Length: 291
Image (cartoon, rainbow, N blue to C red):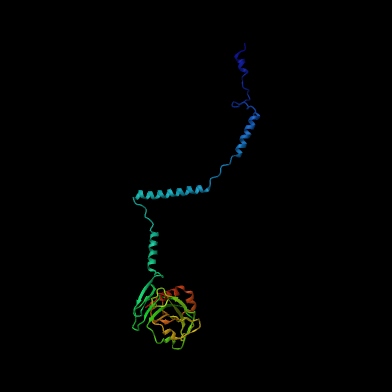
């Protein structure tokens, strides 16, 4: 009989074989190779995962900041028992704007004036001042201070003046002869004429013969008589209108317009380009209602 020792001897591991060495794998069959090749091909067809957009990170940051701020506000409430004070800047600014708007006159607002002594009434800009009838029987109104360009090209502090007076037999500014029309007369349409009043009238632009510069010294309501530029304007045409309505300009000695007022000849271009000036004057004249 063979001894056990002899049998075990045939099972001994070769001395040069490592303890963890495993037998080599069996070679792959052609079918297995083809299967793995198909798997690799299908994986290559699958779309690669898209990188996350940066916008996602931005949204996360915004949300985080929101919760941090909300937490800070909550901490103030928990620690002090009071809610954080609200910002008053916006409401304060709005109050300031509203206050400024109340102080600033509305250029489109008008006041109404009855003048029964002349048998008429009219509207005038609320920014104007209107005096009572003086000892000479004249009703006078003034615009606020304006920067007006004179016929000699200088810009000065000046005002528009409205004079309504009874029919006159003479006008001192025509003592040296006829006036000159420096613009074509404009035809105005009355907004609320009385039954005895014509629907339209001419507004004429006169340069006095005594004036040292060529420009607009005065505007007159001339009824149904109009003039072309550079045409003579005789005094007899002006004084036939009853009541006599004159718009002229006066220069102020200072910003406060305190002191004596001097005659002012308006540059023709200033009437044509200054819409605020012409509109204010036409507001008065077109609203005349004459009985």
